[in-house]
View 1 (cartoon, rainbow, N blue to C red):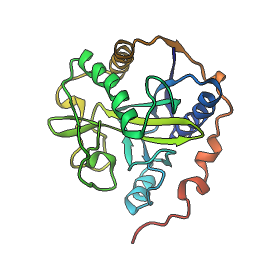
View 2: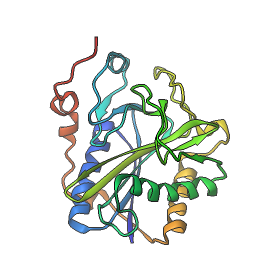
View 3: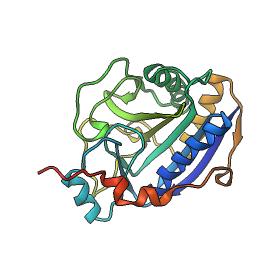
Length: 244
């Protein structure tokens, strides 16, 4: 059994705080949770170790909030995307293993979801070249592309025997004021599909590949959600300064 949590559209701080609460929940319960969520207003998330740059602050001046993720990786624009998290014990029989092994295992569920949605994707089998500060400027191992352009990226953090993997699928290209990201693709290049339909196909893909049963989970079942932590300057800036 795996829990399924759908939290809809929320601001970036609450979204990251919910995933942290999920790590505590999984640590206690030992049962994985697949979560789907979205951002309102359109937002930017940056990787845990990523430096703050001027472009991020310029977007903020234009009304685009940003938050630092607990996971690694680079900046992601959340506008017209389907975002997910999968939280599980590090030694879980289905998803567990080293970082590359778990990425490989999890990718199979999403690959089947794309197939069920009638979307032909390619799964990256090697580490990509170094890109810019944007996640979708370069493809890494076990990420998905369409016609050579990245349409899905993911990142992990591991703590106290629990793994949190966060990722996003670009359904349509982010609208201004978000900048163009060379190397980014979108599902809209090959197919029109709604957020809800793609989400349902991903759930079905996981069910088929892993032979699992999903049980709905409510936010009320989680430990306290540390929203104020993710709103704080202490968390988001982490002594970082814009590059000159």
